Length: 359
Image (cartoon, rainbow, N blue to C red):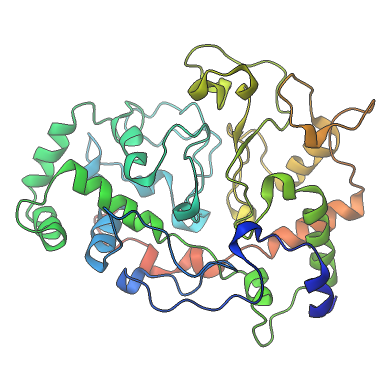
């Protein structure tokens, strides 16, 4: 398919604008500033009370990889969010936290969080500054039931104090600053240098094969309602036919309904991005599917009806799902491979600053 033909296709840019994206100027954040952004984006959005700074990103990176944040001093954020796995975790329900008990939901990938509206599978956190409180205090994750104890540990660690004060000034070792720094680092987890992105930018030698291009057209046709825009997520919540019944009260199987308490949100979960999806298995909020082939088979033949099932999947009198033949499924899988950003998975600027202390 020619580039001119591509420009005639529906472009997944939403309100971001279209056209050939330009590489952004160097952004605040020093060495951790991304080399490129998704098409149509020119900067990383940041709140006024927590702008990106080189020192803040550096501190957040150090904290992300530091086991000091856990109650037993053995678990870091990176323990369950390894870079090579797109900052997701390979187990369906990880048991790598301080209690070694499996969690109730799959560890999500951390990709392009700066543009995400609502975090966690149910949107329980509204912004990156509040995101880390839940894993820090969860008894099965970081286990910091008493956050004052965490801050006592950090204020007694000379390296931690030095890093906080370099970033926030004298007396800067505080919980609020810890959350700000982690948020700054997580905003730099930008993935926008996959083969698709390089082709999208028209870089010399960048190309997608015929099968991947056919897959792109199919993704636009079938998947855009949930995976639209250059972020490959609508940042919304959907019921994609996994279950017919859902939990009650605080049961995480209620999905978005656990947060809003609205019946229409029962069984709806956050749409994950398709970026780096080939390396972030397993899939869904509970990690029930081990492969992308299994995911597509679910959409072809495995969906179940319920009152909150997304209308996208309704097919009249036929069972819910997507109408894809084997060749189309193979084409979609080929396109998803083109969304793998190897630089994001290997960039040392996003890895541990001090591997000897990272867990």
